[in-house]
Length: 228
Image (cartoon, rainbow, N blue to C red; front, side):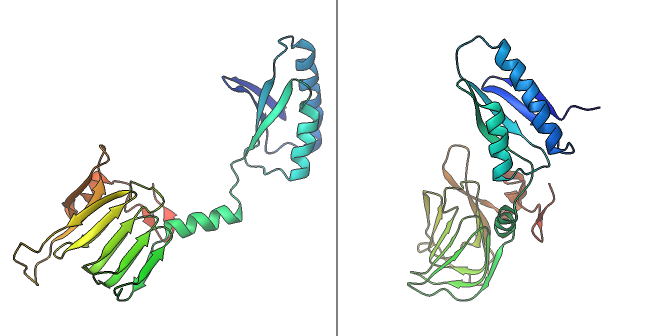
């Protein structure tokens, strides 16, 4: 029969691996036997940290306290608990970040439109207007104001737009100014490109056809599901 608890040494201490399918009573009993033997054999006189991994089981606060009470003494300490279970709150947060926010509107001077995760804007951003997103920004329309992607420091974000007008693009703390005032403008031209931060942390503008090569992870989200 497979043990309810197993031990694995690491540079940071030990991993206590609790089998997801084992009953908690078996876990507690084996844990007591294991740690009691370790305490008898340990003569290092230094503190040892235990990282508890519970796999597909999420322990309650009371269960975590029980495990800590069994393991801990003057030299043994439980420093962390880790599971592979996502809480509902984390799932909703992930879904929100993975699903682009759709905005169909005109952003006028002085207005700021914000989104958590990626933003798809269908409309016009006038001079003095701003769109901000923690992820990437995709604009179907005219960008004449400011587009700020990766506002929380996500430098892998991009801004996709038709850059035929004066505009300002920000990614994280990086700023790039699009200047078209000295160039002839063809109102019917399509100069859709994307702005990104390269490996040297410098903003670059590239043709849209290079987007998949430079940012291969883009396009793997479908309906909030990651197809990686």
